[in-house]
Figure 1: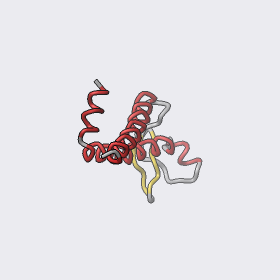
Figure 2 (figure 1 turned 45 degrees about the horizontal axis):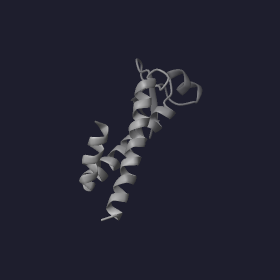
Figure 3 (figure 1 turned 90 degrees about the vertical axis):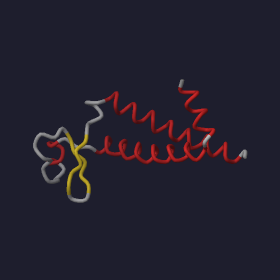
Figure 4 (figure 1 turned 90 degrees about the horizontal axis):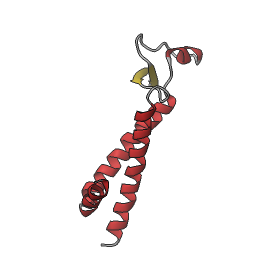
Amino acid sequence: MLSSIHDFLIEIPELAAGIGFIGFFVGGFCIMNFMVAMTPEEAIARGYSPIPAGWEAGVFNHGSYIRWLLPENYPILFLAIVILWFYCIYLLNDTAITWSQK
């Protein structure tokens, strides 16, 4: 199934490149935020302003927080994002090879 989807995408390299680029940047954003997310206790210990009440974790970004998740609480989601991110890298590489052979 995945092989047929990949083969279909490679037949339309513009679509494959678009999906690869978007997935690469969105996946990178998600992975980065998973890695730097802080619990409310960590934020106070590091000297940041308090994370809003009721949030599991947050990412400090330009003076405010983005609500986020902790990888230890959502390991399957984190793993899925990492796998999809690596697939986007593979897709971009395969698209570049396909374009270079045309």
